[in-house]
Amino acid sequence: MPGALFDSQMKTLEPLEGDEPGFRVDCTHEPERVVANLVEEILARDSHVPPG
Image (cartoon, rainbow, N blue to C red; front, side, top):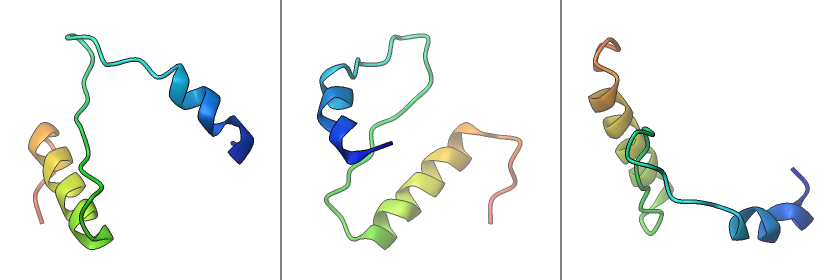
């Protein structure tokens, strides 16, 4: 996606509905911690993926 489209994409972003899967990502931490948090959240939601 061209960078010029970023602002318009953010303006049309809608919150998830109750029946749509998703989660918030805290991006204020170091990148390594953000990735670790993402992996933990995904694994917790996707029970058929073995941890580790």
